[in-house]
Amino acid sequence: MPNPKRRHSQQRSAKRRTHYKATIDTLSTDKTTGEIHLRHRAHWVENQLFYKGRVVMEKAVKEAASEPTDGTE
Image (cartoon, rainbow, N blue to C red; front, side, top):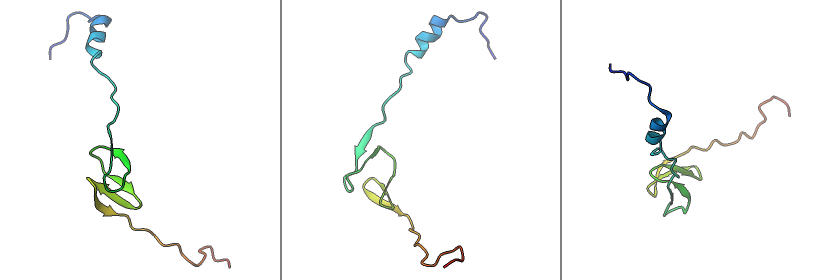
């Protein structure tokens, strides 16, 4: 594997790194729910998973037990 014979300068490395920039994530508003979300990502709204304005999956909601579980009344 080739290796450089001499050390590269700090300026040379800095010139290369100038093109690396932090970007802001693009946000969109869902047409059906009106929620703001990351583009090209599914998002949860009221126990439903939406992607491209359609319900993809629903989360099962557990019902609370009416009896206490610790054995005391």
